[in-house]
Image (cartoon, rainbow over all chains, first blue to last red; front, side, top):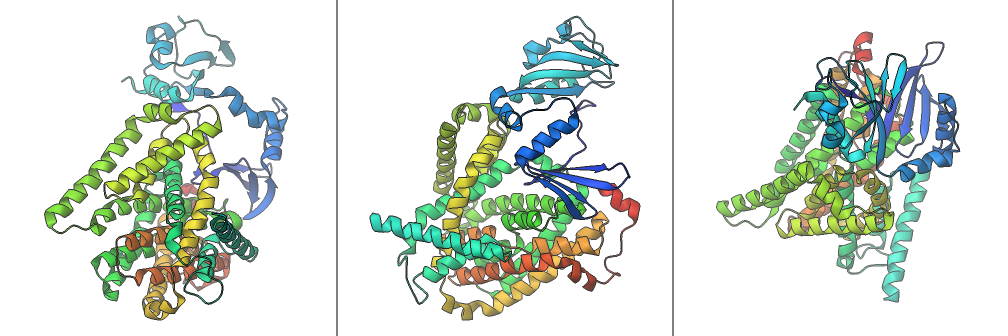
Length: 162
Length: 399
């Protein structure tokens, strides 16, 4: 895959367990946040567990910390079922990717990949529901909505030019 | 019928209660399920629950199939490539030392060539179930070496699948070289077809088994797993590898995560019976026949686990503590050793393999958690000369 990266994540995969995210607290002390696949969260510092949260509490605390919305955690747990196979994601276009310099219409993105670009994050202003004639640029973050199974195809289509 | 159900209920209860008691003192479940089987089996004094262990054959086969099916569903290429070259080197070192050593030991023991291959697999491959649970319970998930240990486990799982595939024709009853070649070709063809299906047939397979509600999905994926396992068995490739490949095919589809979640309770229930049924056929009085080889195998596994742990720490720039953690965590043996010996029993190999593997697994499944929880103290016995403290920026660069 060329330079196109899908949802860059700083988290490290822990096969069979979940993921680990390394961050620092405000005093610069390294913290490790481990999220089990069940949704359980552990926070470790200096080789010792600092905090352990069960699935519901972890998602409530996590939603609260983002500051964007506060959900009843049971809603967050049901979200996957409600949305079914629908996925929202964002991918960044970089110099040299196939999509750079072309319009959405020229690329026939929806017909070829089954993916809808619902917004383009360019500079500080998002372009919501972009016009098909808008020209994509390197550095654009494309917010996409699609079926889970179409996502990888889109990334390949936009990334390698094949 | 009523009596059979009651006996089966007692089997589950006994296995579960013993494992729960063991959990209190930090023991993994697998050896205790086995021990429950040994106690109520026909070969020990006291109550005999099953005088015909073969009555449990079908339920135990379910356990084996779901164990490997889960492994396949869970498998992800990212887990393999995500660790980079250092992970591959560390896992390669671990496997070549332990499989190589096991093979050598197998030949020295002198029970036969096929038997040596079983011994190599049983002594060479760690128990992913025990190791993963151990790391969670020892609160080591945030440690830098944990990712390495889990990565090595993934590679060992994949190796086991390939080993099972290669072993099936070896264990088969080929009278001539050409017949053996045919068996190999058939096994390879089967793997190739399912591998291609996993790679390109994801959409078709998910159309076959996908259903909005969980109930139907369970029914359909169980059918798929059992059918592929049975087909593999008929082709002489072993049901175990069939189950793994069925899981692998599903791992590439949109329903993978749901299947992974739904198969867990099935796996846990039937795997317990698989371990229990294995315990039933063990005769403790056979221990005398195998005590020497088992002692040698355990000594070898401890030494090679330490060597591989130190090697892995050096490759990844970890300290002595991490080396000890890697070594003693990966020392656990369990389900895979028992799966291999179940295959051996099916192929009519030397009967001493069963008590050999039973005793070996019992000791290491119990010893590994005990040693791993004390690895901090044990690490001091690793000389600084063989495992120097890491250069700080190198250690930082690993993750």
